[in-house]
Image (cartoon, rainbow, N blue to C red; front, side, top):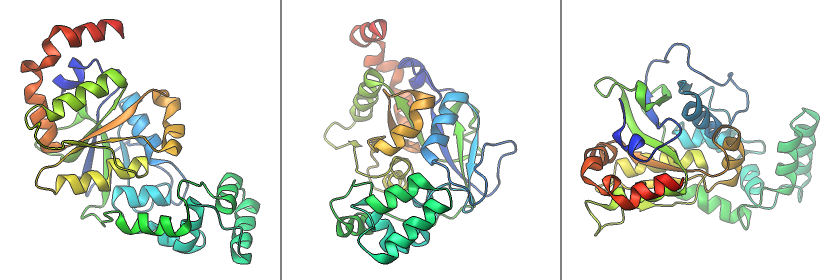
Length: 273
């Protein structure tokens, strides 16, 4: 499917469709079973190269990625269990003997960066208790599909693919255009949100929640600095993600030709870029 919207905003990478499937596409990029990987980096690779990627319950790369794509509460299998994760996202696990032993074991196994964060904490949360409240508020789900497929929109067949959302990786001018278009038909509603969550969780479970709501919103993401670190190699350091529930995306596509995207102000911004 070709996107009039992507063309109108002069997007320099591929919009990425998130698809639920019970079959893995042949030749798709995929993490090795049980090996660490960043789901956000997979999104970036699909956007950059136009290749397809696939993830399942054995190849989601990291615990947050498993949660983010809808494979249940993967934090239960984090080193030290859920309590270990709560410390990891906050001020670390070095306060207890058990935490120190786990951290030392991770370092000895070669996971030195993970061990450092496990012991000292990523410090995104003020406390382990705050992490627990954050996780409890996440709309976790175990999806009714074997695979999550990340496919460039140009390769999507809307008659066959079970598309849940489309993500644009947009620079500031393009992001502004997407926000305006998302609000154009119903400006009396809040049609775009910027939630706090991991990069993959915004594109995955939080977007799934929007899809199921009465008035789905688009979501701005990549406010997660860990995810930004992982995508800058493929997409650079000047993009945000903009994830649009599938029905909303189709509606936005229909408005392109009658919108501000055909007028002088937008065209002048494109010339400056």
